[in-house]
Image (cartoon, rainbow, N blue to C red; front, side, top):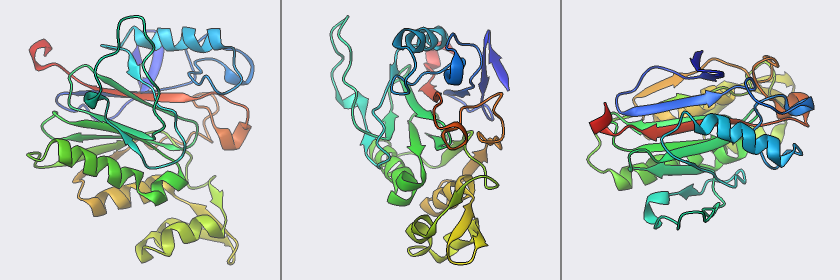
Length: 261
């Protein structure tokens, strides 16, 4: 865990040209089930508290985050293709579960509370993507779509890396036959990441390992897992499956300007 002053955060191995971290629930102003650094406006928390929490994180960023209206799908948003909005005008919030950029200082954001936050970048630090991957989005190909969009933007990239942030761990993510079939029916190897608990009915799913498997299959060479389980660490993380009424974490990433390094 590396502190950004008064706001504790989780990150991984330092990447040349890329900054990234996931917030924890510590360091904010929200109370009750949203205590304390909730960044989700759709959670039932006071909007003023959420905005204060977002402002607390904004102090450590080179620009305003590109927020998404996440819908558990596999659409990828590219804000570089949109002209900057006039000052004082709120930017549009697209329906998407991933975003990419090749613009230095453009901050990408995905919110989670058990789902996987995934950061993807070219080894040369010139192309960046983030994705929100619950089981639906993961099965539908949100990671593969994000990587494909990055490759289209940066065809000269020779290799890719990924960081899979805090998410619900395999001891706590029990799923039914529909989830098992969504993966195993299309990929026999995916069945290895499910532990059957009730024959033909219930499984424990290893979502981070499923994501790593799919990224490896898509050609990502270097993949790091945070190792944090959101469900089992209530002092650090929000967990929708554990608490239902809860806040949201945010994973933020941006490309560093070489001139400032």
